[in-house]
Length: 248
Image 1: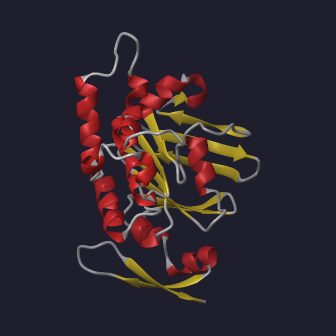
Image 2: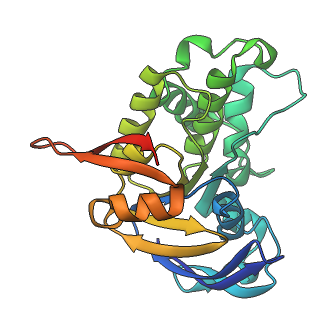
């Protein structure tokens, strides 16, 4: 599935952004705080009204699709999603099956298998019966990702997916993302993790300043201009480049 966005606008937070994201691609959005990454993700997910422009899945505008159909194609994991409901972990993940259920197709054995697989992929199967209120922030983040995987979308949108995660689960999540068949669009702070994406878009002041292969786009010169940090690039055979950062 291809995502196309043309000349988006929303209250002047995001301006004149045009991007096409190919099927199966992992696309990272990077930029300093307040650069418009989260707003752009929400526009791409159809969760904010557009002041201008259009978002399309393949060649179909989101505005022409029913919310149920969008939910079958696209899953969005927010940075600070929460719930006040007294849910178990499994209950929360089962919500991901909602777009596929109906009075004539209620939750069944196949749905339960999909939920089990989603829990296993984020290493939460042992906590399936835990109460949501007892989970840490990182555990909740992994449950939200499992819910999105249970939704079986063709496009997965993640807003700061490694937020709250310890280093083991950060690395595990990024490794999982690389194995997913879905198109993945994610806002990410860690520029070294962004180097593992197929492409990155660099946001600043609500505009996309650069877009392309991270090894070519994320240069020390660009990082100094956009993030106001010095960067030394480290290259190792068979590994994505890494940066060491220092204050300017």
